[in-house]
Image (cartoon, rainbow, N blue to C red; front, side, top):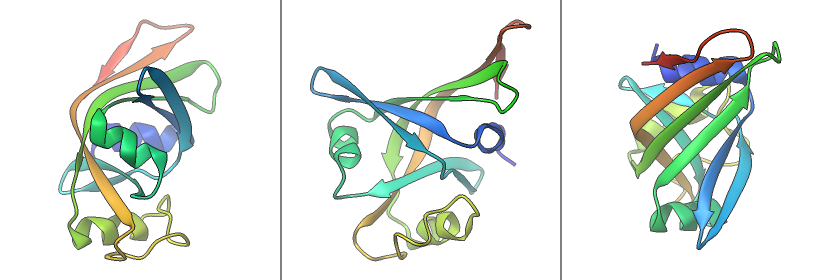
Length: 131
Protein backbone atom coordinates (compact mmCIF):
# COMPACT_ATOMS: atom_id res chain seq x y z
CA UNK A 1 0.00 0.00 0.00
CA UNK A 2 1.10 3.58 -0.64
CA UNK A 3 2.91 4.66 2.57
CA UNK A 4 1.27 8.11 2.62
CA UNK A 5 -2.21 6.57 2.39
CA UNK A 6 -1.29 4.02 5.04
CA UNK A 7 -0.15 6.72 7.46
CA UNK A 8 -3.15 8.99 6.80
CA UNK A 9 -5.48 6.05 7.49
CA UNK A 10 -3.67 5.45 10.80
CA UNK A 11 -4.23 9.11 11.70
CA UNK A 12 -7.95 8.88 10.86
CA UNK A 13 -9.12 12.49 10.75
CA UNK A 14 -6.58 14.89 9.27
CA UNK A 15 -6.85 18.56 8.41
CA UNK A 16 -6.22 20.01 4.95
CA UNK A 17 -5.03 23.60 4.66
CA UNK A 18 -5.56 25.70 1.54
CA UNK A 19 -5.22 29.38 0.72
CA UNK A 20 -8.27 31.56 0.03
CA UNK A 21 -6.79 34.79 -1.32
CA UNK A 22 -4.47 35.76 1.54
CA UNK A 23 -6.34 33.77 4.18
CA UNK A 24 -5.47 30.20 5.18
CA UNK A 25 -8.41 27.80 5.40
CA UNK A 26 -8.37 24.46 7.23
CA UNK A 27 -10.97 21.71 7.23
CA UNK A 28 -11.18 18.10 8.46
CA UNK A 29 -10.92 15.20 6.01
CA UNK A 30 -10.98 11.45 6.53
CA UNK A 31 -11.31 10.14 2.96
CA UNK A 32 -8.02 9.01 1.47
CA UNK A 33 -7.53 6.24 -1.06
CA UNK A 34 -4.80 4.57 -3.04
CA UNK A 35 -5.36 4.13 -6.77
CA UNK A 36 -2.67 2.94 -9.18
CA UNK A 37 -0.11 3.41 -6.39
CA UNK A 38 -1.02 7.07 -5.82
CA UNK A 39 -2.71 8.84 -2.91
CA UNK A 40 -6.07 10.50 -3.65
CA UNK A 41 -8.39 12.91 -1.86
CA UNK A 42 -11.87 13.94 -2.93
CA UNK A 43 -14.37 16.77 -2.60
CA UNK A 44 -17.35 18.34 -4.31
CA UNK A 45 -16.85 20.85 -7.13
CA UNK A 46 -19.40 23.19 -5.51
CA UNK A 47 -17.35 23.63 -2.31
CA UNK A 48 -14.96 26.49 -1.45
CA UNK A 49 -12.17 23.87 -1.19
CA UNK A 50 -12.51 23.13 -4.92
CA UNK A 51 -12.40 26.82 -5.85
CA UNK A 52 -9.32 27.37 -3.67
CA UNK A 53 -7.50 24.39 -5.25
CA UNK A 54 -8.28 25.74 -8.73
CA UNK A 55 -6.38 28.93 -7.85
CA UNK A 56 -3.59 27.37 -5.79
CA UNK A 57 -3.27 23.55 -5.83
CA UNK A 58 -0.70 23.42 -3.01
CA UNK A 59 -1.97 22.03 0.30
CA UNK A 60 -0.75 20.87 3.66
CA UNK A 61 -2.34 17.99 5.55
CA UNK A 62 -1.80 17.45 9.26
CA UNK A 63 -3.18 14.97 11.74
CA UNK A 64 -2.40 13.56 15.17
CA UNK A 65 -1.95 9.81 15.60
CA UNK A 66 -4.27 8.17 18.09
CA UNK A 67 -1.48 7.79 20.67
CA UNK A 68 -1.42 11.59 21.04
CA UNK A 69 2.38 11.78 20.98
CA UNK A 70 3.08 11.92 17.25
CA UNK A 71 1.65 13.66 14.21
CA UNK A 72 1.90 13.53 10.43
CA UNK A 73 2.42 16.54 8.20
CA UNK A 74 2.13 16.18 4.41
CA UNK A 75 2.77 18.91 1.84
CA UNK A 76 1.58 18.22 -1.70
CA UNK A 77 0.18 19.58 -4.90
CA UNK A 78 -3.28 18.36 -5.92
CA UNK A 79 -4.03 17.41 -9.52
CA UNK A 80 -7.63 16.78 -10.48
CA UNK A 81 -8.23 13.33 -11.97
CA UNK A 82 -11.75 13.07 -13.39
CA UNK A 83 -11.68 9.35 -14.26
CA UNK A 84 -14.77 7.50 -13.08
CA UNK A 85 -12.51 4.58 -12.06
CA UNK A 86 -10.80 6.80 -9.49
CA UNK A 87 -14.15 8.02 -8.17
CA UNK A 88 -15.40 4.43 -7.87
CA UNK A 89 -12.24 3.40 -6.00
CA UNK A 90 -12.66 6.24 -3.49
CA UNK A 91 -16.34 5.50 -2.98
CA UNK A 92 -15.54 1.79 -2.46
CA UNK A 93 -12.92 2.62 0.20
CA UNK A 94 -14.17 2.43 3.81
CA UNK A 95 -13.12 6.08 4.27
CA UNK A 96 -14.94 7.20 1.12
CA UNK A 97 -17.98 9.50 1.15
CA UNK A 98 -20.32 6.96 -0.46
CA UNK A 99 -23.42 8.51 1.11
CA UNK A 100 -22.68 11.93 -0.39
CA UNK A 101 -21.69 11.28 -4.01
CA UNK A 102 -22.05 8.93 -6.93
CA UNK A 103 -19.26 8.27 -9.43
CA UNK A 104 -19.77 10.37 -12.54
CA UNK A 105 -22.45 12.57 -10.95
CA UNK A 106 -20.77 15.79 -12.16
CA UNK A 107 -20.29 17.05 -8.57
CA UNK A 108 -17.76 14.56 -7.20
CA UNK A 109 -14.09 15.36 -7.90
CA UNK A 110 -10.93 13.46 -7.08
CA UNK A 111 -7.40 14.76 -6.64
CA UNK A 112 -4.08 12.91 -6.92
CA UNK A 113 -1.40 14.06 -4.51
CA UNK A 114 1.85 14.94 -6.30
CA UNK A 115 5.12 16.53 -5.19
CA UNK A 116 4.55 14.93 -1.78
CA UNK A 117 6.70 15.41 1.28
CA UNK A 118 5.51 13.63 4.42
CA UNK A 119 7.08 13.82 7.85
CA UNK A 120 6.05 11.97 10.98
CA UNK A 121 7.02 13.93 14.09
CA UNK A 122 6.93 12.98 17.74
CA UNK A 123 7.48 14.45 21.16
CA UNK A 124 9.86 11.54 21.86
CA UNK A 125 11.71 10.78 18.62
CA UNK A 126 13.38 12.63 15.78
CA UNK A 127 11.26 13.41 12.68
CA UNK A 128 10.91 10.58 10.18
CA UNK A 129 10.33 11.16 6.47
CA UNK A 130 7.64 8.88 5.02
CA UNK A 131 8.16 7.80 1.40
